[in-house]
Image 1: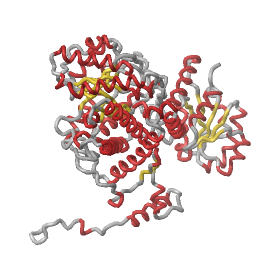
Image 2 (image 1 turned 180 degrees about the vertical axis):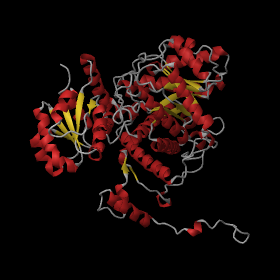
Image 3 (image 1 turned 90 degrees about the vertical axis):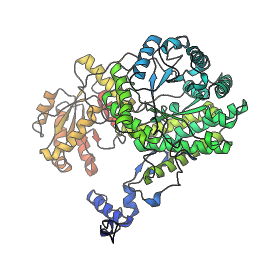
Length: 627
């Protein structure tokens, strides 16, 4: 750099690369991978990843892919943040959940959390939580003028809200300075229970609460627009957003009909969304949610000051696993990060053992410290909309918003959220989405670390005190690990009955280089179903395999080798295994043109990447279970 040339000449030393050049490089890589016909845009498309809602993630985004200008933080359409300062002043609200039925124990965990970094309390009251009469004891010692309280009271939202308001007054805290949420959500309750007999009365009661909050306690929000029931029933990101919009619109209609102005009505709603370990999808979902709600508020005549959506993000229960639950710490960390980067005002990180029962003190500590690290050490809240300007994130936000808006319009066209729930329209749509995802999970296209991939059969089980049963009767609650959990439970039953887990003998053929890859693949596959693998000695051949199989104690076997070795040995080894008493013989790999030859020799099933692992494992357990 010189006085005559103040700019660095480094960039000028390199020629500009264009998309066509990059595509040609991709073509070369694909040819080496065996994809020889893809070229140009087709080569780029071969690297794309399909998501739910018809969204495809491309491998490269440029300025040409930029979506509409997202605006400025704190201004419509609020894509970048609901407030001009975002969360930079005080960070986001660290909100922990409490589901104890015993008020005394709930109080102990609440105080421990508030003393160690948590800033607000999310308390289940009524069915599945502390009784309304125990709310005072549960909140004993809590400074209600400092810590916000958020209620989740289901059908008991009205008496629970009255009790909390009484406690505010009794504590000497001014209602006008109170913060938190009363959690009335009649449509969410309908989704959870399927019981809409009292819906009209519940909506009217919620509207009265909202009117009281608007005049006496503007820092309290009376209604929750909880999208978790739709996420937990297997819904996609766009379906979660669309149902939340339809619910919010239904509440605006109810509140304005009861006499509230549109601005006051908007300010009475808090939206709750799931945060998953898919970080970019979560970030885009929260940004899209604010954009969509800003459009709804605009059409309804709300002022810009009231149109910003207030968001509470909760780490997903669908992604939590019961086996190897320690991995949940990683999932919730990524989900919590995504929620913060996405701009949620309040974030709940569930304990890693939440799928097993009531969290213990260690799990609660890890959950709250996860947020402390993100806030205090990673300084995530110090940057407004960190993902903003990314061509990928902006494009994903736009695509997700459009898909969600289309679903919202379908619901409105069917008569609104309540009618769509009653008719089964929403349940049917979510069930179809979950079925497609279930197939991906079964085929391990969507891997679950510690469950469908890299399971640890010797991991000691983690036991927790049972949690209160959640209310049900409406939309189902699903988990990604459901199918594999059923398989592992069958393995546990076999272990309890016989003293050993079901086993499969892995017949490794040929040199190490020829069988290692498929041996590892097969071991990973069978262990996902709780089936122990035995592969000693390795390798084996047609002469030695019978003795090795007999020593293994297994009833089924799986051949593992390269295609070339299969051509030389598979038929003879499969026949020897059948003669040695193997009830089923599998082969790791696609059979290609030799299917009939291998089948005639005794191979019953072929296992490969993309096969229905759940079906393979279930069938294997069928022939190994102790009667």
